[in-house]
Length: 117
Ligand code: FES
Image (tube, rainbow, N blue to C red; front, side, top):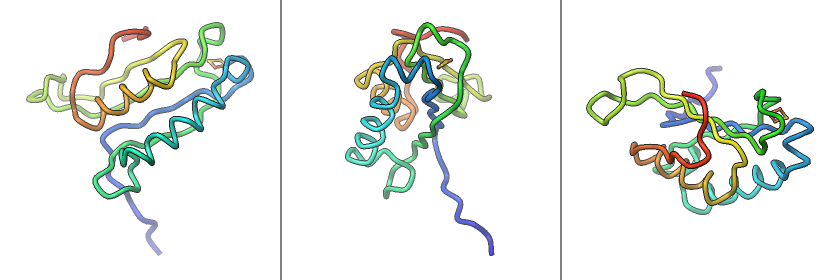
């Protein structure tokens, strides 16, 4: 039997390793999950498109909670036409939710708290 496939606009990963958890990443993950569900952004909601996953260490342990996002963005929408990635340090729920909304809407990702590419 073929498993169900859900098309997504973006994949968010929130680190749940030790250092990030001591900085509240477990609460961030659960609150973000509830917000994605409530705002119908989650991929399993009608019209939703954002996937959220717990991750292991993302390599910026002293700057947690760390979150990264991957999405495919067309050149016509302002992207490079390839895979876009963004990494966030000291991630708060309001910031994570703005990232999720931008990913869902296909707009520019927030720049505050962002590091890396
Ligand atoms: S513990 Fe989260 S980035 Fe390493």
